[in-house]
Image (cartoon, rainbow, N blue to C red; front, side):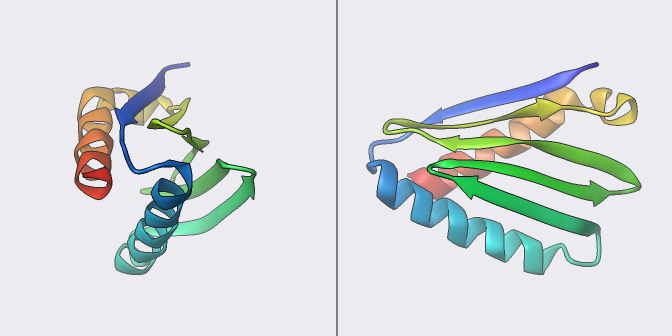
Length: 100
């Protein structure tokens, strides 16, 4: 199975980075409510296990807020694997803006 992995460095400190990530994710869930469903997430310390359904595809993964980077990774459904590069690029761009 194909997978994705993005790591974006930051200099915010772990707590500030996590607060920004949490606020961003809440906004994404509201903004894309018409396009995603079955959104779930569970934080354990500074690691979020997440999942949702988009365009009929189940997406899940892990988002880890580390002291100097945020890492997002997970498996991709076969149909989404065709767009892995674009998916990773979009995640990277959004995180870079968020953590600047």
